[in-house]
Length: 348
Image (cartoon, rainbow, N blue to C red):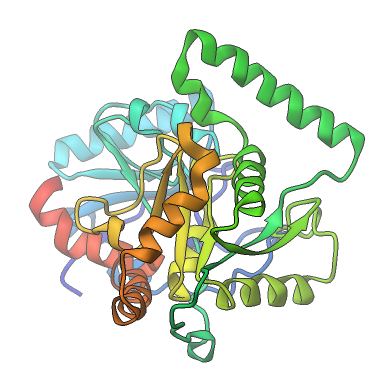
């Protein structure tokens, strides 16, 4: 390991990002499910000698405005990094954290970004995603119609949740009249339902949709046995050619990376979205990108992609999806590449 990173003590009262839980275990595990993921890069790169470090990385995750105490903490380390001529990196990974602004000297890793509001020091990082067992990986041949799947939240648990959803989207719709870019901020359920509806009405594709009434990635909201839910989710991807993977509440999708990791093609609603490592990955070869203004034409975009390929090319694209995930988008691999290859070229 040639790069050395210095991690100051975290600011108390604010969560530590998952990649640093090896040194700061959480007081409680929370209700997150299906995160059997290990991190090795940040542990291997750690140095306690700030003078020899290539960069300073703050271990907290700042998903929202934290007040003067946090601003002072960030200002102190930005001053320190500037004095030592070292870049300073932080994390801000909440669903709505793209609006949180930081000292202009700080580089910010984010998961949720909108292209129209991205700032010069924002870095799009991949989400925390499992690397699935190799036995789940199987290349599919072409058929008369491609199979399109979705398994996840697309319904409502109660009248209250239905009203809450429609109220929020109605507000975004009204706001769009004055500021068209607000359309991209409609909740993920809106885009999921719109894409599924378009595919169900179309004779161009076959569908396999499992619609949940609540979020299945957290113990507090899951509506069935977690093991069964996970099994059905994975099988829905494995048995498909394309997987609908629009945004969630934040402008990103775990399902997007899970689909690539299993060698399938995600179908992304382009909600002004920023994808990780866009300057190196030719995403047009491994995803279907549907403009948000043409979401009703989702099946056409899928067929245009599918029909343009021979059976051999189609098989190769699935392999390329998996290879791209392994090389660029596994979170530990992403950070290893970023700090060992990108840091010396762009950030020092």
